[in-house]
Length: 145
Image (tube, rainbow, N blue to C red):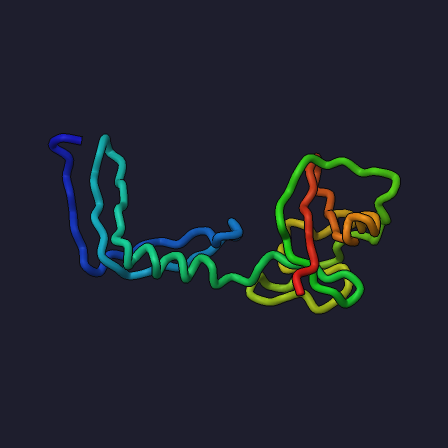
């Protein structure tokens, strides 16, 4: 990077394009930053304070959730889509509320990505957790008291 152009701003605009749950965002944080122009690309470096502020914005989004029978389940992870005969089919996810709200109706999510996908309850010995089949994988949901 020898000889690159470096620009500093104490009021740089730092774009926030995704939440910690990888939901799209269109936010920004104003903070101390440096831009390095290297091979025609702009590389943004931010201070620890700006990073902390950016993370606050990214994590302010409501957790990816699903409501089943009046109980809110939180997204805990994903994996390969395997359905066993012991899983109880619950129906398809009917709609989604905005990502900054929690679902309030049965088979409702706060993420559009799962609308129309099939929801299943795991067997009782697996704590009655929920999976939602998404193409060739699944999203795993757990009730967090």
